[in-house]
Image (cartoon, rainbow, N blue to C red; front, side, top):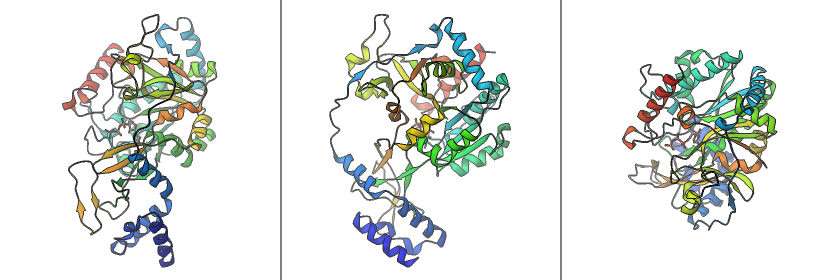
Amino acid sequence: MEPKIEELKAKLKKYGQEHLLNGYDKLDDKHKHELIKQIEDIDFELINKLYEDTKKKPKTNEDKITPIEYLDKYKLGDKYKYYENIGKKAIKEGKLAAVTMAGGQGTRLGHTGPKGTFDIGLDSHKSLFELLCDNLKEEGKKYDVIIPWFIMTSRENNAATIEFFEKHKYFGYQKDKNLFFFEQGELPMVDTEGKILIGEDGLIKEAADGHGGIYESLVKSGMTKRMRNMGIEWVFIGGVDNCLVKMVDPVLMGIAIDKNVTVACKSVVKANPHEKVGVFCKRNGRPNVIEYSEITDEMAEARDEDGELLYGESHILCNLFKVDAIERMGAEPLPYHVAFKKAKYIDKDGKLVVPDSPNAYKFEAFLFDAFGEVDEMAILRVKREEEFAPVKNADSAGVDCPSTARELYKNFKLKNK
Ligand code: UTP
């Protein structure tokens, strides 16, 4: 062990991170081993660069943003059935799997435990995971298949997630047969001086690397290989926090197959031109999502000759990918976005610091930053009341919260009895 420590010390010195081994001697063997592994795995060049970037002024955006074409699911006319039949055939052939991204921290919601275990307050008291699973089972029945389900967790919530599923007998699914868990990647958090933080457990304080980590994690964890072995060609990737997410959609799939694209996304039209959501666009000629903060008022309000907003298709984390697109996207690094967060840490004197204001940078990749990898994608506008009931905030926020999601869910069920 000792020669390795000397080697690591030299590496840490090079990057000004020697403090990471300050508490090493006080750790038990298991934690010593874990800390060493963490240090070995960190890409210090990347962390340095990400930290340096936090000091730079955001560069003025010179990207060329233009509108992107979309289809409206309810204006497809005869084509609706045509696409639906193509999709139905592929689903029946077992070519579709669902991935649920459940690695987020759910800080805004403030629920202790994985967000998927949250009960939105229905009479059934079903958790988000169970609501999603109900939908998968119901859809699978229509096509006489079991839709394989892959769940992305984080190191922080993996054990609690699996325990929850075990307790509920996997909601009728079978672990390692048609239900799979895999962990997403993490990046260390750094303070305002660029020093990597040590957490209460004496280990490096790492945070999930954002939903953009999905592609790399699916590949690295061997899930894409598994999908191929299972004959899966298409993968719906959605969040855990939309209780109306429709993961099995033959029309979306039929469009992707017919148009020969490897990515097909769903959108809902913005509630108003200034709604704070990211919208689909083309960036320098390639598919992308533009954040509300990046768009001018003039662009936000611009309409086409039919009166539709030019930038009105909100990205709702409902995206369908061909397995090979995931593999290509997983091979290319995505840009990281920075968030300034509150993070408890152990200082250089070994004392626990509990900050009352943000003190640390967290780096996250966004799933849609990979969209530019494809030349063309299909976008299908669906109805908000049918497919989008997000649970982001606590009820006190009044929007995208348990009570609003519950109402949307109940209304949808009532209408579709
Ligand atoms: P959000 O960023 O909207 O929610 O993620 P969050 O991370 O759960 O909550 P906040 O931002 O801390 O309040 C949207 C979806 O992406 C998943 C989330 O679990 C959710 O389903 N996600 C997000 C991940 O799986 N990993 C991440 O690192 C981030």
